[in-house]
Image 1 (cartoon, rainbow, N blue to C red):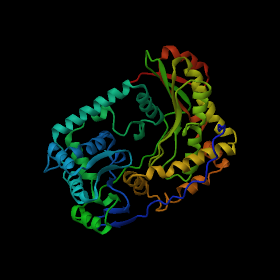
Image 2 (cartoon, rainbow, N blue to C red):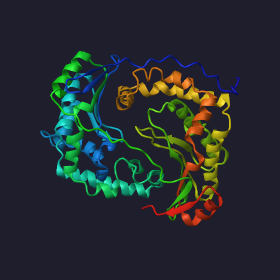
Image 3 (cartoon, rainbow, N blue to C red):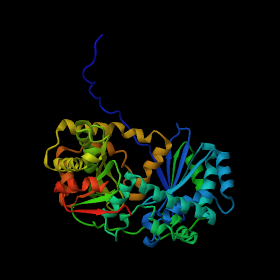
Image 4 (cartoon, rainbow, N blue to C red):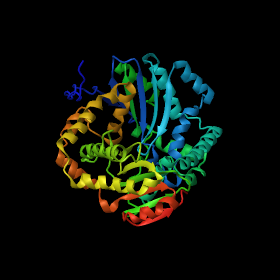
Length: 450
């Protein structure tokens, strides 16, 4: 018997064609996107609205998230229990949520229940119940979740990183779901006002993906949503500003046996022409298991179970960070190693073999996201939210393939500006402060988790 000592060479990726789709705009301005997938067993419907956190007033931060959550708690004609019974009877999974750039109400069903599902979706978006008791329950849950998040080192680090990355005038300095100070005073009337101003068809898009008859869907959309009218103000234009230059912010968490590290700065938008270069660069640095951060901090030094990068793409520049969690005693050397890897990708040429492996992975896993009707419907949302071209997904892999070694260097030098790095550490200040100061990374301030 022979034993293989080297893995087989990768083969060329199989051809993939993103499903063809069409769109039609109803008289009220609602755009219907149709993605027929006749070989599938299910249909996914996503109603995408310009009603996310970027559309709310900053004094009411968190109202967009609460509005979306409340949609599934009943309609004018169905209370929460009756609404839940209706979805269960049809075997429909109904959901609603919001992020920075949009809000989404959605459901998944068998094709034969598509029209009834669309009727329920229309009712919950156009005639939500907004029960005061349900509102108070969800608001209390949101406030509790914030407190629980601040008790979790990783979630605390994520929140504090945003807080110290963006200045206080930039909405991105907080989570999209709001803060305790903004959520606590919210009332159900605030929710009703946000809904009446932003849940309107003029800026809305209905995405339907799965097994369906396109003409039947258009007739159903016209019947259920065609007499809906209005055109809201849309989102704010957010102009991000950094809170400061290179520095260490140490969030003191006495008794911590680990330290959470976040090193990064303000990144790029979702429509930045450098997207493909930055995306591959981020993957090479910390987006795959054999990425540089993971190899160095996990495999070679044994500091962590994992290290990775995070590139948050929004309508305005979102955060980019390298992140990990390490034992308290290696906090300072782990921070210097993170920064060293950021410096290295800026200053050294990327080996052709390393780049090839990362691109092969990204190109190879690309079709997996479209295996379900829900995945296809979700993939249509960037076209809706950011106006990406119709051939975006069809040309995605060839654009990744075109990224060169020189592109990685230019992307790293454009994005990673050393004197702008925020180095945030959540840990026990009494144990890590002195060593962090000795790194010489930059000036340091110690702050409370609150």
